[in-house]
Image (tube, rainbow, N blue to C red; front, side):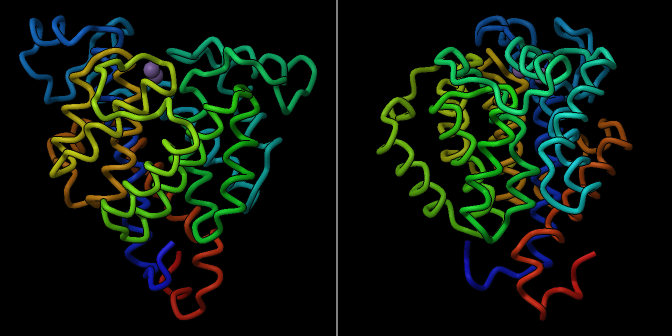
Length: 309
Ligand code: MN
Ligand code: MN
């Protein structure tokens, strides 16, 4: 976290991060599970919120990546801080509502909570899917200014459904990247954070990029890192990421989250914002601001407090 991070700028970037997550999800979902070649044959390059795909989505419709993030954000907002039970309860309500899609590992963890009240799934080497990493944003916003808190909460929310060291590391690193980008950090600083992840877990190395964009959290993050670090703006980052296909809604969501935080609200194309469900866009931005206001960063800095909602 940068010492001179200004609270107003943080709030705007936090809003852009959550809006970017939803937009990246909606952009990528129609090409989820497609290959690069299949996408090229059907769309040339996919640059718009077209809907369709295997889920038969409306243009601009979001999926589980955004919905699970909203479950977490609403729980933290409602309790005015950390509440693992609140998150689990919202996941349960969401699963009962028959969501448009839900990952197998997520479903298993949520069902264990519903049946037995389990708040931590046992360690499992197969829990390396991206389902915990894709929803870490609200926890990153709540913990702005406190890395220890981020580490604890990022892993606790993950362990509701995924308990695996590589998934844990991915959640913490994405949270730290959000912390840096929301505070106005440079790409060089973000790259150093990713390099430190790659030193601890060499499997995340993404240069040269292997071109795999599956739901395995390592492939997902390699794809996001590859396109984020070479991008020059929000649109380029998210478009190139989803056109890699595979788990395109999730790579799109994570890329949109980072690019939103880094490039800011003005960088998000208006034609995309217009196509999104207005209620979703309003809710993600309101919750982003409220989570930042609850964070140590905003609470600690009395001169900035009046800027917070
Ligand atoms: Mn999804
Ligand atoms: Mn997905």
